[in-house]
Image (tube, rainbow, N blue to C red; front, side, top):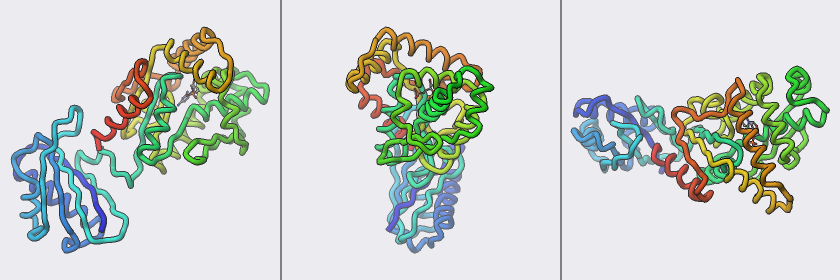
Length: 335
Ligand code: DC
């Protein structure tokens, strides 16, 4: 037995529109999954609170599911959720991988756990986005792509080649033959520079500043963005960065922008260093964070900014778990 999910929308709350949308949804689920109506075990519908003129279950009965157990329920009001929407969960006798079906306005909804979807988490340094991105990815069983690590690898290459990261022509020359790749190693991202694992080497203050500078160059960005888009098109993932929701994936299924007061972000960095046994100067970290924000926000290509449709979360006075559950709740609201 498998469960097939689907959803559709109507323009108006009228019996005729609901009957036609439900009929189309059932027919499409059966045809796209290549199954006959006799294989249906039961069907559950839910519809948003703004659809009251007709029960989807009644529409399904009239469409031809005469003997199948059917059930309809009204959903609670959820602010910002897609309106005039009918969702369905169909249990069928089959052992093939189910194909979810999202029609009309519902095609913008997250397709299903079996389809590719992307979560963009942008924000400045120290806003908590990498930790939150990893935990959210873990919750949904998908990969996490730390896009900052890619720019860090580019910066490392320049520094080891003795090239100034602000010299765009020299950077372009060095990076022409540079290969940055990422792999998933036991749930954590491993970053490779020309085939060498540089995951730990790119986590220094020097590299943070250099990555911010190098990432302002057009060629560097287009190379890294192409790689990010390629990964995101094939695999469901949470991407954390500066320009994911605005530039890399403007149509990402879910967008978040995490921020926090600079003093809080500097304190977090200093505390992280202390845990690693590294002595650090809080004032210096604060200055660097403010400088990096300014560089990232003011560059001409894909600067750090809030996407118009992103959910903004100020994490200053929140624990990581609180931020994770806020993000997870927002995602689930849209599912
Ligand atoms: O997230 P991070 O601290 O690892 O990022 C390092 C730098 O890389 C950051 O200061 C700006 C740049 N970056 C970017 O321009 N675009 C991204 N999507 C991610 C990072």
